[in-house]
Amino acid sequence: MAEQLLALQDEVNHLRDSLQEDTGIGDMVGASQPFIPACDMLRKVADSHVTVLLLGETGVGKEMFARALHSISPLAKSPFIAINCTTIPEELIESELFGVEKGAYTGAHQSRPGRFERAHSGTLFLDEVGELSMNAQAKLLRVLQEGEIERVGDTRTRKVDVRVVAATNVDLQEAVPAGRFRSDLYYRLNIYPVIIPPLRERKDDIELLVTRFLEKYTARHGKRVNGITERALQALKDYNWPGNIRELENMIERGVIIVAVGDAIDLKDLFPCLNINKDAPALHPSLNREEGDVESLVGQVIDQSTSLEEMETLLLETAVKKAKGNLSQAARILGITRPQLAYRLKKRENGSLLE
Ligand SMILES: Nc1ncnc2c1ncn2[C@@H]1O[C@H](COP(=O)(O)OP(=O)(O)O)[C@@H](O)[C@H]1O
Ligand SMILES: [Mg+2]
Image 1: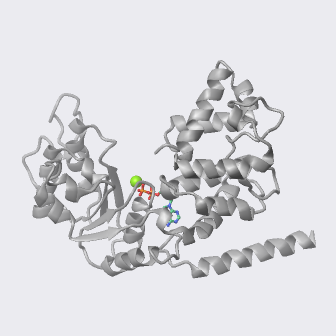
Image 2: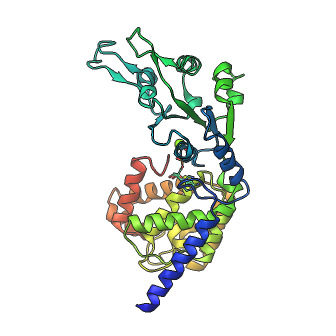
Image 3: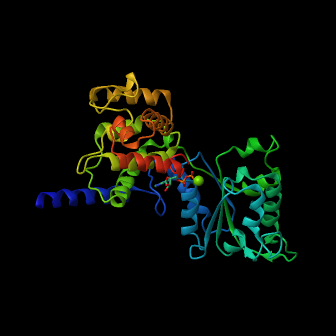
């Protein structure tokens, strides 16, 4: 018992040390060379009201940066409102952004404010702004220039005082000459661009991130886990992370669920579909391996730079198909439990693993 307590104390101290090195803002973790300038850029612009454009691949933390910026700005106590421009159908985007007056169209039974109004005196985060239609782009430009909105079906204009943070993973500089993005809106948004580097360029952050996610998911799943093995950590550092931090976070959560209580997360917990359960029938001859071969298999996944999510989706689907939809049998084929399989299938349905 005393020994366990001491080990726990050690872990807490270690965690505290690693957090002190961390230069991230708010909940953001990171201390690598490419990450620091992005945080510095954010700190410098926090006090002003300037529009910020966050640029980076999917899963690098654009939304997290936007929230962090809001939290260190003088607007921190005012609302932070986010809107993802890809998830709202074209015909609804205008009413979502600017609101609706009662009777504006059939079904508009009540007046309601849009996101600009709800973000008044705070921050509005326009995620995936590169996906807005040309029509919506024109309306957005007007608000940014005039500082006022018109609800759909209203003739009145309303003043809104909003700090806009936009994000995109498409190259707007290319979208402008291609005619997909208005150049005037591009210049209006691109006053203060902040580039968030992909995870493969900031591998020094992987260990800090893994520590953070282990803490988060052992707490969430109420499970005691003894960290991660050296070789598993190395495999994470060798991978090229097309899905960036989101993919790493999902993988650690999955590892926490799969690992036996009290064990350290190892390769087999991170890459469960490289089936190493010797008693289970193999899905494919190349997967019918002894444990010693796992590292070389991991190497193959990395070389092909296939996304692990893609690979796992394929394996889950194949197992379910092979078991003719019987989840217990599919789980046995994969060498995991039925609840573990059900959890992962559900997560896919909800889109959180594939976002
Ligand atoms: N620096 C970071 N520290 C800790 N977690 C992070 C960091 N950056 C991103 N994340 C996590 O990774 C996931 C994806 O981040 P998100 O901001 O949604 O990315 P994006 O908007 O660029 O697709 C989220 O769950 C977020 O909490
Ligand atoms: Mg996002």
